[in-house]
Image (cartoon, rainbow, N blue to C red):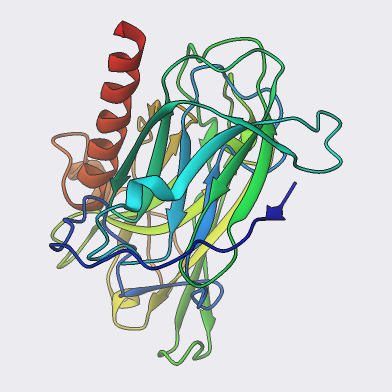
Amino acid sequence: MLGVLPPRSGKAPAAALLALLLASPASAQDPIECPSTEVGPLDFTPASRAEGVTLDAYVRVRYSEDYFLGVPDAATFVRLHEDLDDDDGFVELGPEVPGEGQLVGDDVFFIPDELLEPGRQYAVVAESFELEPIVIDFRAGGSVDLRPPVIGSVSSPTTEAVDESCGRGSGYRVDLVVRDVQDDGPASSVELLVYLARQEGLEAPELVLRARGTGTAELPLGFVLTDERANDPACVVVHAVDGVGRIDDRMEPVCFEPIQGAFFEGLCAANRIAGAPTGDRASSIGLIAFVLLLVARRRRA
């Protein structure tokens, strides 16, 4: 359940520029919808009202791009509380859960010192400068995460010309369907990352879309290539990351001709990206490694 708290008092003083560890989607690709103009907290893991969250899960809140530049205390903007209203009717903040906060790129992580308590309701408080804090709740399950998520299959991309939107040029919409995403945590804690993996002039894989798992057998995904990018054959891959940072990155590239929409194999079959990660892929894996390191340190404490 969503809720609000009184606004945070005062604005944090300026500090040195914080290094960004997680790259944003490339400007050459537009999302299906216009980019959000909202500022502050945008996305939560675990998701609001999630059930059966694994006991070793961490909290991750994605903020708007560059929201914390020059902010020294950004890691304190996210807190975890017990939720005393156990019937899901309203968030009633209870004791604060001890743990460690950390800013990575535009994401604030909160790593609890101990495992979550089985069956307990929790509330995440995400503060901001301009608005009232956002509060979401979730319920812990009864087990820890044991396996990474698994993507069953991804359809061959189809394309369709689209008109100019969001103040940018026209292009080609690329649609694909991800099937049978499985995980031992809640489906909403699985994040699907779509990368433009290979194309003429592309120096490193580029993140073009983020999407949440839904638990359904099929999840349609789509992004837009500009006319300039649509002139050359392209390959995409989809990775899945679960609520504790385990990743399924085994998918082979799926390739297509953006303008014709025809599927082909030559470009990607000859140039797979299974080697050392680069670009956005490297950033994402680095972020996941950071989280796993914190979780391992917590377990040893």
